[in-house]
Image (cartoon, rainbow, N blue to C red; front, top):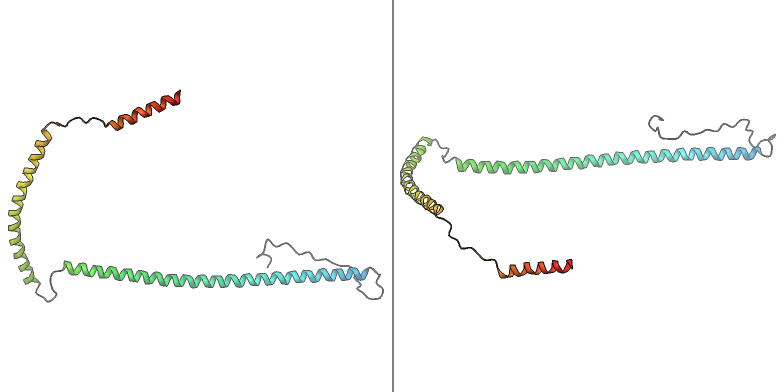
Length: 182
């Protein structure tokens, strides 16, 4: 028990020699010594009992606290699992929607027929798009030529005079600085 509580001070036990008590043959001062010793012993036992009760309360509190922590942890885990499950179900739904949008073929065994029809449609669309690309490439070439011409021309912009307000502000600053220096 003393190994568990290394900080606890040692209890001093008084040894009383030749304690005769309040019986015959004792002197007048012996009774007072006896009663003081008895009082000290009662106080020591009361302190031990009090310490024991405090220790029991502390242990009870710690076990209750541990139980509450465990219960809170279980609730947290349960809610975490619920959130993860909900998140996973949302991702599954999202993946199913993506799969449905990517998979254009029905699952009735007519894959080859549908694929052939789709190829024919794409072939006709490609011919149309080739003609569109030719006209768009001509337009882009014309735009590039215009950009090169504008880059080669020198900048003929006029020089802008500063505002009168700006010059006045600068003059006012100079005047204030001169006043401070004087």
